[in-house]
Length: 315
Image 1 (tube, rainbow, N blue to C red):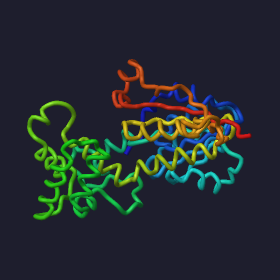
Image 2 (tube, one colour):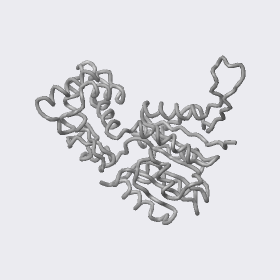
Image 3 (spheres, one colour):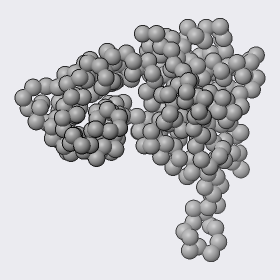
Image 4 (cartoon, one colour):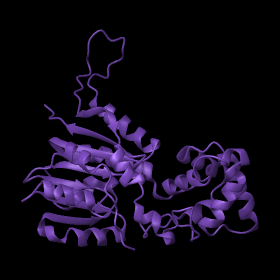
C-alpha cells in the first residue's frame, strides 16, 4: 500500500503548536508523516520530533518520508494512550513542547480493502489498526451477545436502528458465520427500513464505524491519550487534537474543559475552599474546522474538528 495521507488542518495545527527551533514535539498518530514533516520544518534547524503509530505500514511510510531529517526524528510503534510510558521509556522526563493527536482512521487504511474497514468493498472482517491485536470485527459480529451488539452500534455508531441490526446479525450467524465486509454491509442494509435508507450516506456507515471503534477501543484510547498528553507537556507546551466525529470531539471537549476549570466548589459555597487552579488554557472556545479551500482539495476533511490547549505552570 502507498501510505500517502493528506494532513488535515495543517496550517491550523501549526498555529496552535507554534513549533520553534530547539523544541521537542510528539506526533501521537504519525500516519503518513505529513503533519510531522511540517512540524520539523517549522522547528528547524534543531527541533526534534517523536512519532508514534500502531500501524506498521504507517510507520514504514513515515520513516521513509522523514529520512531527510535524520536524528531529529524518533519513531515508535505504540498506541498514544500510553504516551507517558513511551516518552519515559525514551528518557523524556522533563516534558515536551507540543503534542498532536490526529484521531481516527487514515485514508490509506480505508482504501486498502484487505484491512476490512470499508463497507464499499468485500474483504475479510478485520478492522484492526494494530495487526498484532487479537480482537477483530469478525469476532464481535459472530460471538458478542445481541444486547452488547446493539449497545455498540447504538453508542459508538449513533445508529437509531441498532436493535434491528443486532437482531439481524444474530439471526444470520445462527445459520452461518458472517465472514466479509460485503456480507455485513448487505445485512445491515436489509435490516434498516427502506424509507430510512433512501437518503444520506451508505446505510452501513454507522455500523462499520461502531465496530471499528470497538475493535480498537478508540474512545478509551482517546481519553487516556489526551489526559496523558496533558501530563507530559511542559508549562507553555501545547496540545492539538483533531477529531472526526461527535463522540471523539465530545471527549476532547469535556477533558479540556475540566482541566481549564479553576474552582470546583459547590455553587452554593460562599467562598472558594478547594484551591484548585486550572491546568490548561483553552486555545479558542470553539473547534476549528476546515475552510472551503481545504474541503475542495480534500473532501474527507469535512468532519474534522481541531481543539487546542496550553499547559499552565502549577505553583
